[in-house]
Image (cartoon, rainbow, N blue to C red; front, side, top):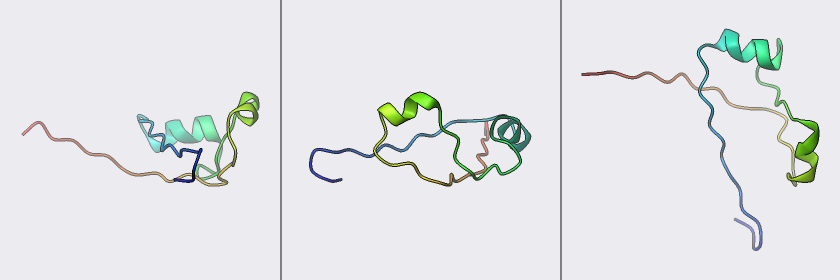
Length: 58
C-alpha cells in the first residue's frame, strides 16, 4: 500500500462464464469500466482474473 492510498480487491460471483461473457463481451478477460469510474479510480487494470469456485455441503 502506498502512503495515502489504498488498494481493494473486488470479488463478484457469477452463475457461469457465459453470464460473464453476456456482461463483458467475447473477451471475458478484458476489464469493463463504467463512465463514473474515472471519478474514483486512479488506475485502470486492463485485465481481470477469473476463478472457478466450488462448494460442498459435506
